[in-house]
Image 1 (cartoon, rainbow, N blue to C red):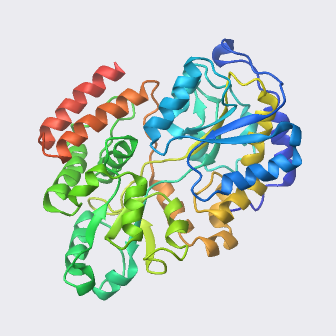
Image 2 (cartoon, rainbow, N blue to C red; image 1 turned 180 degrees about the vertical axis):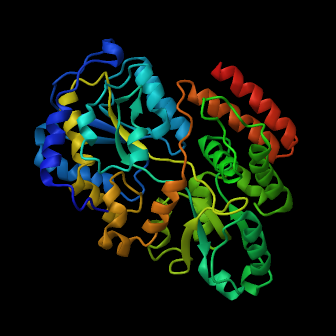
Amino acid sequence: MTAGTFRACAAAALVLALGACSGGADGTGPAANDGRGPITFATGKDLTRTIQKLADDWNRARPGERVRIVELPEDGDRARQQLVQNMRIESDAYDVVRLDAVWTAEFAAHRWIVPLPDGLAGTGTFVPASLETGKYRGRLYAAPWLTGTGVLYYRTDLLEKAGFDAPPATWTQMREQCAEVRKLPEGEKVDCYAGQYGKYEGLTVNYAEAVQSAGGEVFDASGRPAVDTPQAKAGLRFLAESFEDGTIPEKAVTFMEEDGRRAFQEGTLVFHRNWAYVYALASDGSSEVDGRFDVAPIPGKDGPGSGTLGGNNLAVSAYSDHQATARDFVAHIVSPEIQRRYGRAQSFPLSLAALYDDPAMIERYPYLPVMKESLRNAKPRPVAVRYNEVSTAIQDHVTAAITGEKTVDRAAADLQKALTALTD
């Protein structure tokens, strides 16, 4: 991925602008500093080892300001917990932290991260929705890095043999196509569809997508919960009925991203909802479906669905003693040159808008036009300081619905009550 019109001088200006940061939120809390020296970068699991390679290059160029990579747990909830525990004790263990886009409000409100200058994205080349996820109360606290939304991976070979020349745009079409695939000798032991339904943040995302794809919303424009509307209940009903009728296999109730990815790559799923990182891994030659899959927007109730805006942003810890180096490292990672290199090595969609129209990147990752289309329809998760509690409530009541512990109507009513209590 490359920002074709983003000039090299922007990267230099970015470094200078980052150096001008000051103070915590509302002028209180730990102040930014100009300390330099070795830093640690707390990030997610480096599946492709690309981040380590970028760090190695940085370290060769800056031996006095080496960066050490610390991998957080694969489970997003556990990763957040580890970061929060370090911030609460004002630990200087992490200098640069990779935040799920939805954590920005919480970390900024607690003044665990220092604000970044608006000039960081002054070029306007970042994906607008991605840029917004790094803001809290109008200030930029985290530099947009990875972005994206859920897409539908599908088996082109099985659909073709079943007589279909296009992936499904609706839930009904998906079920119909699965039924025809299962009539094939190759489809007898293949499950239909799976996303992420374990009791963690992935379930919150998949639930939100189902609600949005049925024309509903988890929170309305005023920030009030709206999960007991007919549209929202239609989304939850799709999930519950899909488990009940076998569209989603029973075992998927514990699936996280990697569980579903492995199932799809092993050839045991026709359709799979996941993030763009799967594309490179499913195409690496070791996958059973290499050369036999493609991507499309996720299906919805009456047409193409609406994904949840995901992504990771980079922030500087308020407790870092080497914030100047940390700011330089953030600037380095989100710069066009490094995003281009990172994009060539793996298939996470990145934050610069021009990357989605770059011919060389589209040739390498043909999914990019689909991602660009899907991003236009994607919606962010709620911006809430108590977001973790909101997500936990969603997980509790959606799990009750998909396991049959509660009816859809009861689960929706109980969730509406719980979310109202958290947002009043």
